[in-house]
Amino acid sequence: MGSKLRHSHIQEGNDVYFDCNVRANPWATEIRWWFEGKEVHTNTSAGVIVSNQSLVLQRVNRSHRGRYTCSATNSEGEGESNSVHLRVQFAPVCKTSQKILYGAARQEAVKILCEVESDPPEVNFRWAFNNTSENIIVENHAPSHEGTASIATYVPRSELDYGTLFCWGRNNVGQQIDPCVFSVIPAGPPDSVKNCSVTNLTEDSLKVDCQEGYDGGLQQHFILEVRDSLLQRLRANVSNAWPAFTAKGLSPGTTYVSVVYAANSKGRSKGVVLTAMTTSMPESMNRMAKGMFS
Image (cartoon, rainbow, N blue to C red):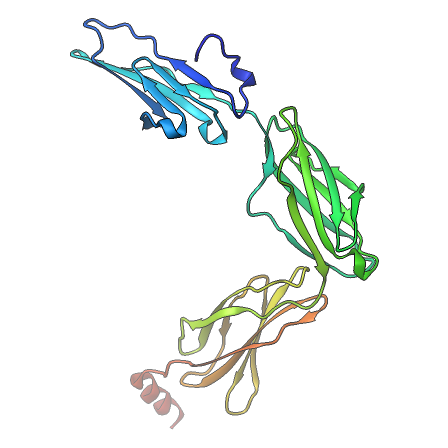
């Protein structure tokens, strides 16, 4: 890297440049730059400038983090440099794919996890609650063991205590601009499962696969009930932590009605009903069975 740069203190928005020092005889005819194994080309609109033995990155951001190398080629062959790891420090930003919807009954404490990406990873957090009438600072929160996460314990005591919680992080680079947003809603029974299908039908078993719906704000589990369509007798009752089931011990060539429920501590969803017939026993097996009992 350029000798004037303090490698450990590069932050988003800084300009960064690399020098490629080459020894060659005859002199190199081509010098190329690489980022994480992919060649880097000039892209002025993105602030990337390749000029002979120099690489300039204008206003770097998190996407520029990684390993950079250069290579040089002459008539004798090609040489590649050592790699230089570019670290770009940045203020906290929300981690994607975290849970943002929480359900809680009145007087019930709910723990809300706020996770951010940050460099450096030492983060201080601030929480606030917003409903339709006021903003309230939330004091009951603590960092998790990672340092880039915080857990707020929130207790809705009336209907006005349901609303939106905001979480901001701050590190040595600065304050998080856009907060992480979480909704606290009254807990209730879960929604029905969806996109269910019956697969792997055999003479004595069937498999049911579904996608889970909203959990009502509480941990849910799933139940499959299988009844024969003629007498409505319960032939299988299977519980699972996710909506995938296998019912066994069924009769061949019989139509069954399967009902799938989701349930949590507040109740049970509406059932999703599927109908399927197990496969018939092969004719040779039928003749054998008849011979055994004649």
